[in-house]
Every structure is written in structure tokens, then in C-alpha cells.
Image 1 (cartoon, chains in turn blue, brown):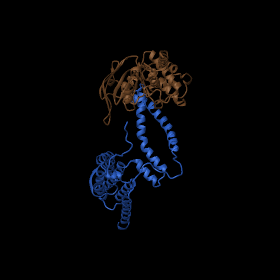
Image 2: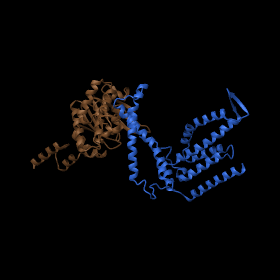
Image 3: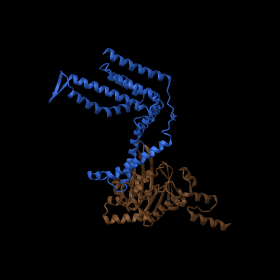
Image 4: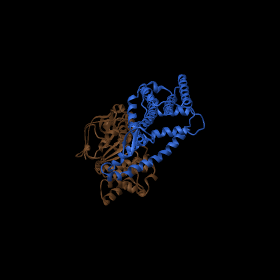
Length: 259
Length: 270
């Protein structure tokens, strides 16, 4: 009955109270910094000394570590293997397997790429864990992002758990009509049409109902809309956002002139 | 077929206690309505009857089967469960094959399936629609198709989840007639409903639930007379019962016939 709509964890913390745009700007700053290549260890430093403390500040450390491990370990592992074996130029061979040489250069490149991806995904995770999707979207819409775009994003986030609930009910209803859905392969194949059929028909009907429902609330009206959700935005946060943007500009400048 | 529930407890994931210590036995051929506010545990309870939910603690037996030892599909031969929303189960291209889906699942041969489907078509009045695609029918008729698809299972126990929601007076009457017919064939009927008038007019025993426990359990007249207890689970007695009480009738009334009877009686006395 209780389905998670998103990564969002409802807690009371400093990060939760920040304006969504401030968090988004911070995340983008961190991501740009780690991808600019100002320093080899910068992504690692950002991850260890900014993102991890932020997860504690947002009181979502446990969820953060769980999600990071689940999402990233396979990706980073795969990346390491691919880069280590297929990185084109490397001279200092550490060891060889068949025709593949694992070199110092390939390993260090793999580490750099992995740490960048880690920083990028982890900083977005912090944003998602501490920001309700509708807050983010209504704030962005208020600032002029197209309502269509935010509808597509929020409805996509919501449609998956809704489909899961619906699929659960359909499975219950068909089992109640004597359909075996578990056991051998034959049973499972036979069960596909009775389960998928109502799900697809139902979803098609729902699309129409959704369209009517949002139009009944004047979705396409060409006026500026007000929002029921009050999203606070303090002067200090506006200042912080300009500072982040300043940091980005300086970093890009350094990248261009110094390196 | 007897339903026996012993000290049934059920907790949803996340420590949400839905049922705490239900003891209940329903004899073969009874007509039982379960009422109570949303979240009182009605649906959780009946979902145990055909094994959709298994007890966290305690046992539930359908005849000689413990629901723990049998799959939902196996239990479908004993307990038919009519879901609220027909759109969450219909998938065949015509009514006839939709009704035949259940009997074929239970492994009945063609002759028996044909016989059961024809019987269900007759009972639900779907005669003119046997080759129609269920999705071309109105919601009222789709509900009849869903109902028919369970009737065709020919199970000794039939559970209706909110059979009258969204139905007009005419189709409520049809549902009541179907319930009567199934009852006369000796089947056990169980309904969960917010429609207390429907329950009082068509069922013999009412179980009122509140916060995962049984609040009241007795004959219709016994239960609907307990206005104060029922109020704790946000159930109002039927309109006629309340009217009868306002008019000062000596006995509790549950339907038009008993209301008129009591009305005449009180007139003669005056």
C-alpha cells in the first residue's frame, strides 16, 4: 500500500529547507568542477569532503550510502575493467592477461573517470534525497521552465509506482480466477496475456483520464499560474547561488587560461 | 463449506497492524456482510479467505484446507473473489471466453466449462452480449462480466468486494437477485460493503469491524439496532431503521416489508 514515489526521504534538516534551485545550483557546480579537470584528485576531494558531509547534514547518510553502493558499484566496477583493459596508450605495464595490458595510465584514467561519475551521481542523489520532486518542479515552473516539461518529469516519477500497485491488483484478481502465475516456465508464459492485457488497456484509459483531469484544472491556460506549495527562497540563498555561479566561472576561466 | 478463523493477526510491511486477533467461523450457506469504516480491516480480512494474504499469526481454514498450504489459484476452486474494479481483470476479446477463463484454469473440461459459462450468462443477464468485447460494454455491464467470471468458477464460497459501488438502483437489484439465487444453491456469500441498506436488506448476518477487530457480530436485526456501537466505526444504521426508530416502533426494521409491517402494527395500536 505504501509505495515510494521517488528517492525523497522526508526528514527535517538544513538541506531539506533549502530552496530546490539552490541545491540544484550547488549540484551543478560540484559536477562542473569535477569534470573540468583542474586537478586529478579534485573529484575525490569533492566526494569525500563535500558530498559525504552534506549527506550527514541532510540526515540522509544511511540512505545515501545504500543508494550509492547499489547504483554505482556495478557501474564503477564495469568502468574500471573496461578502461583498465582497453585504454589505448599506456607504457608502464603492470600485468597482462592474454592480449590485454593493464597499464598505470589505464588504471589512473579509470580511477579519474570513476571518481567523476561517482561525484556526479552522488551529488544528484543528495539533491533527490532531500528534495520532493513536486517542490523541485513547482519551483522551476515558477521560474519559467515550461509546465509541459515539469509535467512529463513528475508524472514519469509517479507513474512507475502507480503501475506497480495496479499490476499487484491485477495479479491478485487473476489468481483469484484460478490462474497460476508461479511455478514452471509454462505457467509463467501462459500468465503473460491475462496480466499484461488489463495493465495495457487500463493505462490507455488512464492516459485519457489524466489528460481530461489536468485540462479541467486549466493546464494549457496561457496565464501565469500560482502554486499551492509555498517554496521559501531567502536572500542568503540567492547570494549563495551567485557565489556558486562565480565559482563555476572562475573554474572555467582557470581551465582556459592556466592549463 | 465452513470457514474457520483462529486468532488471526495480520501486519503489513512497515509494522502497520491491520488485524489483531480475529476469531470467526462462518457456516456453509450463510449470507454475511462485513461493514466498517475505511481502514477497519474488512478487505484485509476477506483477502485471507482465498489466500491473497497469509496470516502473520493464527490460522484460517477453508473446509479442510489451511490457506497456508494452498496457492491462490487452488483456493479459487473453493473461494471465488469478485474484485471491485472489473477493468483490473478483463482481457479477453469476448464475454464468453472471459467467463470461461476461470473454469478452464481450474482444469474443467470443455463440456463442464460450457455449462458453467452458460449458467453464469443466464444469471447475470449477459445473454445479448456473449460475443461482445467486454471493453465495449458500459461499466455496469463490465461489472456483471467480472461477477459472471467468478460465478462460473462454481465455488462454494463467493466473496463480493463492494458489489454496489457506482451501480444504479436497477443493477443493485440484479446483484441482489444473483445473490439470492446463489444462496438458494447453498453457497456461502460474503460481502464487504459501505452500503448498509443493501447489506440489511439482502444479508442475514452482519459483522462490524473497527481497528482490526470485530466490533459486532450477529443477525442483521441485532447489529443494526446497535446505533451507538456502529457509530464508533462510522456506520449509520439503514435509513428505514433510523426512520422506524424515530417513529417509535417497538421492533427494529431492516427492509420495506418489515417497516410496513411495523407501521401498520403501530397504527392499529393507536
